[in-house]
Image 1 (cartoon, rainbow, N blue to C red):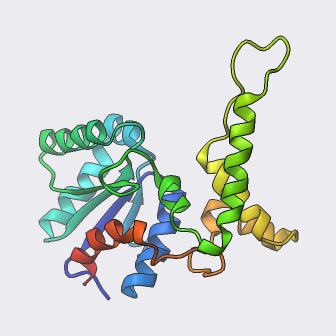
Image 2 (cartoon, rainbow, N blue to C red; image 1 turned 90 degrees about the horizontal axis):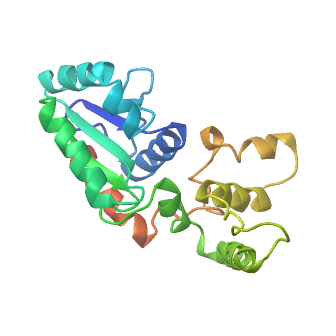
Length: 208
């Protein structure tokens, strides 16, 4: 369903863009037009804070046209702090935007935190295995190493999740990459998972 007013969605990177394109298409039967700047990659909070001119122009023009600006970023380590920073930036620059922070607009985390809760439940043993792997790493002591082993990032966890489910051909391997993932593949993902409801409710105000 076409947005009720012109819309521009600002995201951090290609992974967010890909997920939101497919999430919105699945739930609201609408395809975001990247070429028409309906979704814009801002490359994160630090980038939009220090190189904000182009983003401000996009937001102001869209507001002047009666449109809605949505900024969907990661909460990272502190939801309240990140939300406050973005709200302050919006006020200081006199732009109107509505904010949603992954994973659920009230907890710390990121897109990958949301994705962990959006897998097909049948595949939960894959993550159980990964969690056991992480716990094992914490217990390993390497001679001559005085600091604990580094636990792989959540991005690596999502990558590994898809890698074990997909085939070994080059074509299948390409589907692991962020820009090629198929979040509408019900064998891998559940876009109706309860944890994703907060995002759906947020977007429904603009696409219903």
